[in-house]
Structures are given as C-alpha cells and as structure tokens.
Length: 169
Ligand SMILES: Cc1cc2nc3c(=O)[nH]c(=O)nc-3n(C[C@H](O)[C@H](O)[C@H](O)COP(=O)(O)OP(=O)(O)OC[C@H]3O[C@@H](n4cnc5c(N)ncnc54)[C@H](O)[C@@H]3O)c2cc1C
Image (cartoon, rainbow, N blue to C red; front, side, top):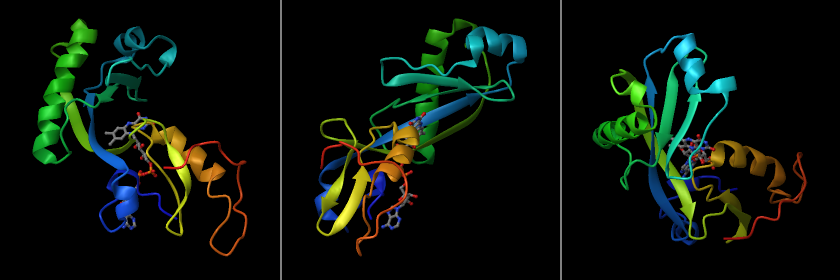
C-alpha cells in the first residue's frame, strides 16, 4: 500500500513522476477573545476562498488559523517564516482589523498534487495506492482510507466503505 502523498520519492518512480510536491503553510494568531473571534467567523464556520490562500477556522481558544499555498516553495524553517509573512498580509487584506495582530505560530509541509488536480487511487506496479489529494487530504485521505484499498495483497477485503470511483493515476 502506498499512501505517501507528497512525500512519495524516487524509490517509487512510477508514483513519483505522477505527483507534484507543493508547499502549504499555516499561521495561527494570538488569542483574539471570544467576541472578536465570533465576529470573524459567525456560527464558528470553517471558511475557504477560491484562491490558493485563505482557508480559516477558529480554534477553541479563539485564535484564527489561516493558511494556504502562500508561495511556490517547499517547506523548511526559513521558507515557512517567509510564507508566514505572505499569509499575514493576506490575512490583513481579508480582515483589516487584524493588521496588527500577533502571529504565534507558523508551520508548513508538503501536499501532493496530481496533474489533473483530483485524488487518485488504484493499483500499479503491484502496489495499491491512494494519493494526490491536492491539499484537501484531511478529509479525502480519511475517506479514501475506507474506500480503498478494496483488497490487500492476499485478497482479504478491507473493512470500511465501498469502492470509490476515483480514477487511477
Ligand atoms: C500546512 C498544511 C495545511 C493543510 N491544511 C489542510 C486543510 O485545511 N484541509 C485539508 O483537507 N488538507 C490540508 N492539508 C493537506 C493534508 O494534510 C494532506 O492532503 C493529507 O495529510 C494527505 O494525507 P496522506 O495520508 O495521503 O499523506 P500524509 O499525511 O502526507 O502522510 C504521508 C506519510 O507517509 C510517510 N512516508 C513517506 N515516505 C515513506 C516511506 N518510504 N515509507 C514509509 N512512510 C513514508 C510520511 O512520513 C507521512 O507520514 C494541509 C497540509 C499542510 C502541509
């Protein structure tokens, strides 16, 4: 089973050349207080924009996490700091009232993009795989983990949901 998404390396060349490794980054504000946090995210909803940047959600201690693919760059400590600055500016563009807010945390990692920007699952080179979540794997990887793999190498059916219709890589 290959479920290595963006971290798929040249040890698995068939998969490696079908995925693009893209950096993704998150910042977290200082605690904003309940009233201010509530104004930013009415009904405590998760929000997303149609841009590569701008998904945000309130934490239980009333911080705002704000993230996205701030720069076309891999994640490493220096790159994460630069991406945090980009995200802070984007945050202020959406919420001018947060221009001076302190950013307490920034981090980054890799997300695996398929060339057609949809997740893929199937079997290739004797391996079942599910990957290419294009930055949406928190939900999709969990779902696909149940939907796939349908069988293990000795033919025992995995538990969980039915087969997905996700195309093969
Ligand atoms: C900063 C950031 C914010 C994100 N925000 C969101 C979000 O808001 N919503 C959302 O849906 N998704 C989000 N994502 C994307 C989400 O995290 C990924 O899509 C998801 O984690 C992919 O799940 P996965 O299990 O396929 O792979 P991963 O979680 O990437 O796990 C792959 C694992 O494989 C391991 N591995 C690699 N090579 C090998 C090997 N040779 N042998 C054994 N193990 C190996 C790695 O160590 C890793 O643990 C975000 C990602 C980042 C980085």
